[in-house]
Length: 96
Image (cartoon, rainbow, N blue to C red; front, side, top):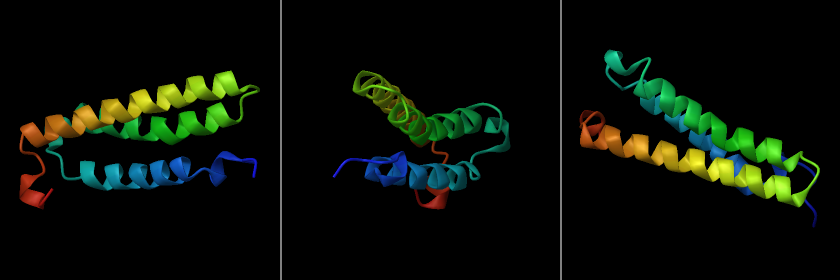
């Protein structure tokens, strides 16, 4: 079955769920991180499904693969930011 829309892609669906979870999670960051780490994490999370969607709507498989690579990079960026939060013990008091 051919994919008609990015909405059909499980990776896009799961990355949309990830965005919601990241937005909930960063609410627990200290206020001094509001415009720094919190903002970066939200942007990286939003970038994942956004790049998947944009790539799927491009005109070629080559472009789609390129945008999947961008999404993968944003996911790695977010993972790094979550690890930074972990090292700074930002989420330990919230059970994360």
